[in-house]
Picture 1 (cartoon, rainbow, N blue to C red):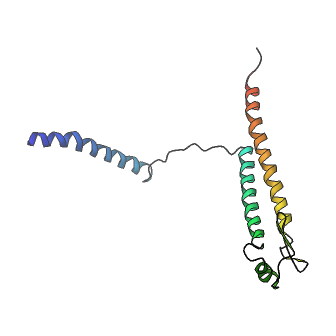
Picture 2: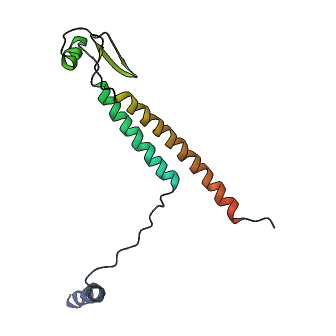
Picture 3: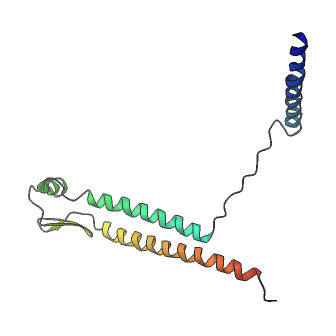
Length: 150
């Protein structure tokens, strides 16, 4: 039994102790820090940058549209005019796109909401198209640059 325990100590304990000692020596040599692996990072291509811009524009446009929709009546139409214009009347007209709420002949939705929606929509669509064109053009440029006829 004693021989078995001694063998286990030599088979398991001695390599573990040697490994711990080696790591300690490496850490002492490198300033008490283990080497960090260098992970490959994906390149930020122009197509990816345009896609990020498009996503940001879609998100901001959605948030702005929700803000504009908060002015519109949903369950009680007269409450929309009461909370936004101070008159307990049914709205003259309302629409979701362009965002509009008219109470007593006066537009209640802030005047910057619809132009902001237009700018963000044009930016989002333009960046999406740009991202697709750049992504499709890049592999063709790489294929043609390296090969020669011969």
